[in-house]
Length: 98
Image 1: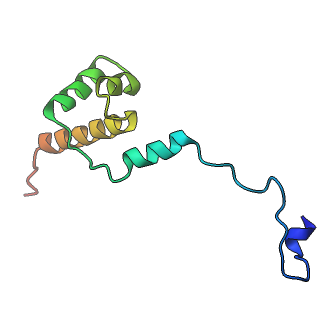
Image 2 (image 1 turned 90 degrees about the vertical axis):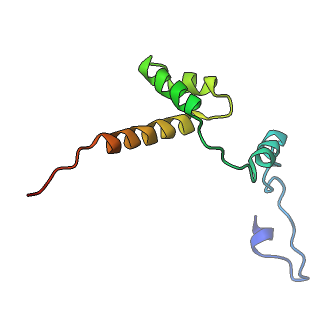
Image 3 (image 1 turned 120 degrees about the vertical axis):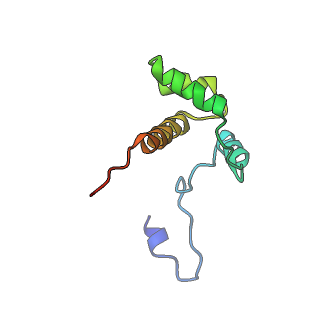
């Protein structure tokens, strides 16, 4: 460690063994390449129905997302929350302030 903090007078720095970060796993590299620049796709009405039916049946988000293989659990959850907001906003009745 002292050699790293105090390089020798001739300007060369000695590298300490085992101080390099481990290489990235091949799986991680593949995942980055697969998802890099991947366009988002809109939810279809069928996907919305699958999500809502799954919630009505009491399925977990993992079970629901397994029915939509290209959608993650969090994506299904967020879509459901969005759908609930849309439905609530449409059901609101305007109140006259007169």
